[in-house]
Length: 136
Image (tube, rainbow, N blue to C red; front, side):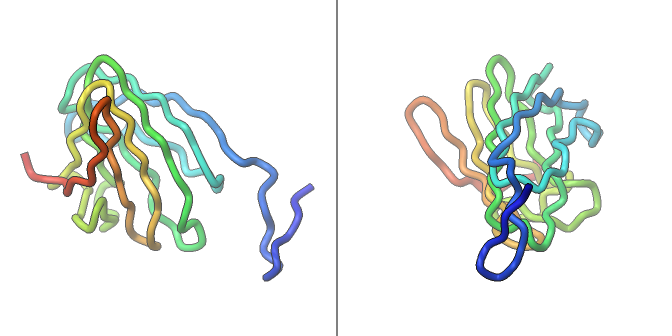
């Protein structure tokens, strides 16, 4: 049974979920992270190559503040938003023309910061960085 917070909105009993996603070929948006209304999600990524796509869920009003942690080991990938969504990653349209390159052995912390935007911070062995997506 869900409880409610001060303004009467439901608080979901789940504090977090896990998911496994396989990156899709460059330009293909099928390696998508599921749309869940949870506060935190941990996603393990499998990728066959650094140009393969992983697609964030559509940013959605009312879900600002949710966090998705993406971890990858042997190969990197390109992080994008849903095709033609207009959603941004670090204030840059990230639906394919621009994408965030993620290196192998990296964790990315994605926080939904608006109804159309994500903040992505990369965490590697010796660095934490916020990098704008680019057109490669």
